[in-house]
Image: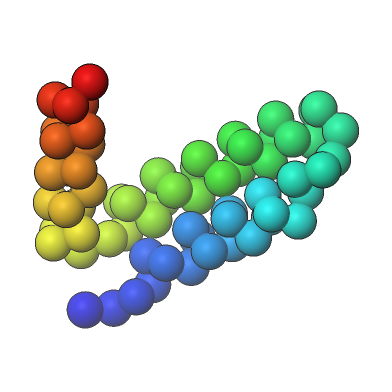
Length: 64
């Protein structure tokens, strides 16, 4: 199983960490970039990881 899907997620989290204390406009842009990287990494992820994320989302939703 290739780990290429982790590259966009790692880049997005790194950018959000570096620009955490930026101005409001930059923080909004950073959060959009991080969400975009998360979506791209989920698209590139193997089906096993997608199943785990789906199960986590369903179980979290049922607890509320």
